[in-house]
Amino acid sequence: MKRHHHPPSIGIERPSDGFSGPQTAITDMSLIIVATAPRRLLQWLITWKGILIVVYMLSIIAWGGMLFLLLVNAVPSYSQPYGPNDDRSLRKIWIEIDSQVLNALFCLMGIGLLPWRLRDLYQLYAERVKLEHRNQDWYIVEDPSEIPATKRWKLHAVVLLYMANSAFQICILPSF
Image (cartoon, rainbow, N blue to C red; front, side, top):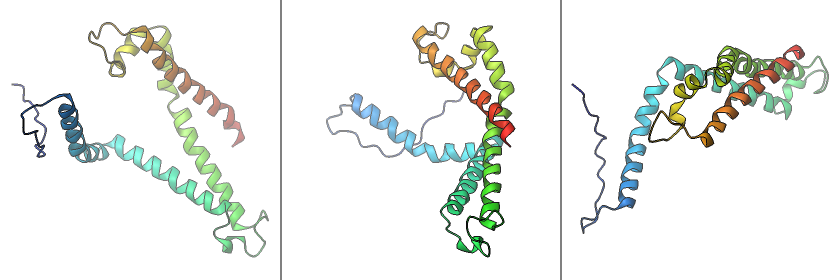
């Protein structure tokens, strides 16, 4: 038996004349989305994918913030006793460590996802139907068997830009 999910009641006022036009329907849907968004976000955050993405983003923010503070010399005690521009100062050492950690975090996405990006590139040219079927939620069409050709360029652009990102990450990898 199929159960239907009914959105929560959020006390939407109807016009007194009983007219429920298109503007009211749009407002109703907007209120439902706003009312359910925090719960849906929390449900996503407690999944493994949500946890990993949040930890990854917080790592980039924390290491990037520390690098910024070191670059603007916000912690002058890290420059003692050698001075801020000496290679032996704690400031210079931590700038190098921060730069390496951030480079590793960005390479993780560029190179770590390379197998899936190569699969997408192969499917883009050899098995286009599989790739389009897997990403069919990108397209708003009445008949799912027909995807408009004008929308295909977006899928091509995303796959090719992902591959370009991975290629550039591989090019900068020897600079470690």
